[in-house]
Length: 178
Image (cartoon, rainbow, N blue to C red; front, side):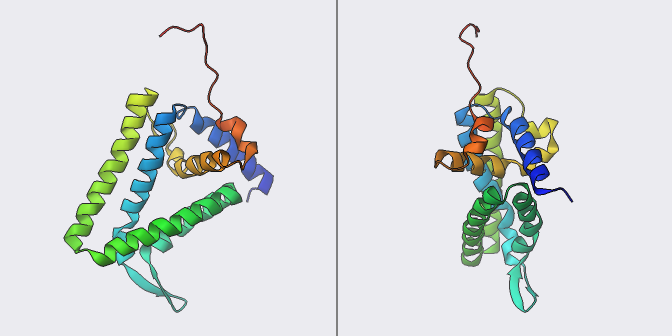
């Protein structure tokens, strides 16, 4: 198992690589929307499957979210806790939707959320970033999106100045031509 400073170093290297594909602020905004929609859509049907764990009834969504949450917490505890808070809200929203609508409506909402989430990612990269998504070159970046978004939020709120330099916009070259 990696030592805590090794994990922090690994996370910062991964973040630096990820940010190269996400420099445009509009692409970043599209990723915020897309990640929220994709997570909510993905867990929506999983919230309907319940079973007891140590005497407590839990949903399949919670159980399947735990390994990736543990990974995020290992990469960076502060960012991981921020994601945990967001995850609780999104799981609650998905659970409320699943409990209030018919199965047909739930699957319809699932398709819409996933479709809009994927579309926002594609538009962000094609229109605003003008390059292919990082996941094409680095499939592990699939798990870095939420970390990137939460790190950007923490920096915007005045926290995590240690990550600000990594996520700072690339310097513009005034001599370049378009």
